Image 1 (tube, rainbow, N blue to C red):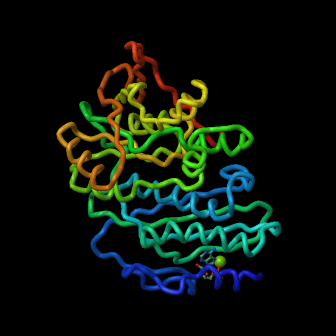
Image 2 (image 1 turned 60 degrees about the vertical axis):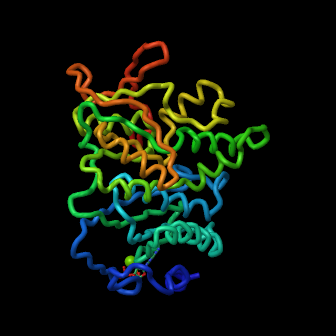
Length: 324
Ligand code: ADP
Ligand code: MG
C-alpha cells in the first residue's frame, strides 16, 4: 500500500468538531477558536521502548498512545478537540495491522468527539507514533503544576500500580492471578480522567498532574514547580483489592514508581475539597485524599512519605528517566 492510499484509508469521512475549517487534504489543518485558550501536547511512542508487540495488539497500541496524550489534556483541565499522527512504518507491519492501530486511536477519539486532522507518514526501521493533541479550556483556566499552596489537600484518582501489574501478568501468562483481565486492561486501555478534570472548572485554584511516570515523580514535579513540600501517607495510597497478591517489593515499586496508570494527582484548597467530592460522584470517579501540602524550609520541592507508625522518609524520584 502506498502512502496516498494509506492516508485515504485512515482519513475520517466526516468531522465532529464545529471549529474545524480544514482537515486532512491540504498542507496543514486549520481550526478557529475565538474565545478559548488552546492547549496542545505531543508524545512519541516507539516500538520496544514504549510498547511491545508481545503484550499489545495493534489496536491497543493506538488506543493507549492516544489515551496517554489525552491524559496530558486532562492534567491541564482541557477538553479534547483534535489530534495529528506522525507515523514511521517498517516493512514488517501489514496494512491490516496499521489500520488496527488507527482503529484503536479512533475508538478512544470517538469517546471525546475528537477529529484526526493531519499527520505525516514515512518509512523506517522501527514503528514509531508521534501524536499531537489539541484541546481547549476556558480562558485562564488551564491547570498548572505550580499552583499548590500550603494547607492544600493532595488527592489521587483511581488506584495506582495497576498498569504495571497488568504488564507483569502479560509477561507471566502461565501463572495464576486474581483479576487478570482487569489488570491487563489497565495496561492496554488506560482511562484518561478528562470528564472529571473538566468538571472541576469552577474551582478557583487547582494544581494537577497526570501519573504517567509514577506518583513519586509526579508529586515531586508539583512540589518543585510550586516550591512546596508534599506529604503522602503510605496507608492511604489507593490500590485495587487484588493488588495485595503481588510481593511487597512489587507493590511498592509499581504504586510509587510504576506509572502509566494515567490517573491524576492534584492539590486543592481544603475549602474546595467538597467540590472535588461532588464532581467525583457525578463522574463516577474514585478519589482518595492521600496527603497535604506544607512549606518546610528544609524540604522545599520534596515529597515526604509517612509510614503507618509515624516514620517519615523522603520519596525519591525514581521513575523511568529517558536518556539518563
Ligand atoms: P505534505 O507533503 O504537504 O506534508 P502529505 O502528503 O504528507 O502532505 O499529507 C497529505 C495530507 O494527509 C495532509 O493533510 C496530512 O496532514 C495528512 N496525513 C499524512 N499522514 C497522515 C497520518 N499518518 N495521519 C493523519 N493524516 C495524515
Ligand atoms: Mg508530509
